Picture 1 (cartoon, rainbow, N blue to C red):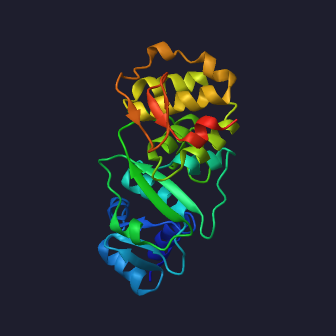
Picture 2 (picture 1 turned 180 degrees about the vertical axis):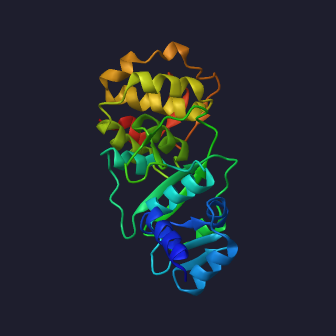
Picture 3 (picture 1 turned 60 degrees about the vertical axis):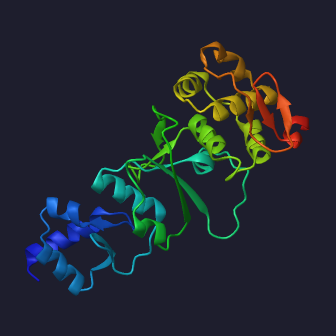
Length: 255
């Protein structure tokens, strides 16, 4: 292999975080021909993971690195969401058993590729897509992954409510709500105003008021469209007339 090709290979291998990926479309845009990539594979430097997707030979798939390279190289918008984002912010009620779980949100127009669903990652990846938050509030979570963002705590908890009760129990989420003493009304207000999910808004307000957080009283609930229809969120629960929702009896009676 020529010195020029070796230098290009070195630059390529230094580009990605350990456990990250290389995508053919991005590689071609950056001057790596099909013939050169074949040489890298034949020489054992790169291994094909799926069509158009390669990894450094010997690397293990690392969740954050893969999402970083996927977002950066293919201009995607996958983000760390729900209770995974809350954990990154220091709120953690769940004690995972075995392989850690990573919840990932993505736009509806960006479906999850098969190789990401089937890959053997260092974490169990769970995905969801929604248009519930048309103006998402995201922040970078680590300087080592500048193209990977996480939901702010305010949105992360709303995402948890969106996934309840199938993914999370309302009681477990209320235990987390009790920890959320520092949520920001200026961030919450537009999130609540711009979502049309009545279940999420009503349950959030019920939990926040029940927890007695000071920031709850700074919300302008008069600007929130809560609808008029009753919503039965659980079977055999207790009806809360103020928010027109049926909540778990255990949650209603919890003190």
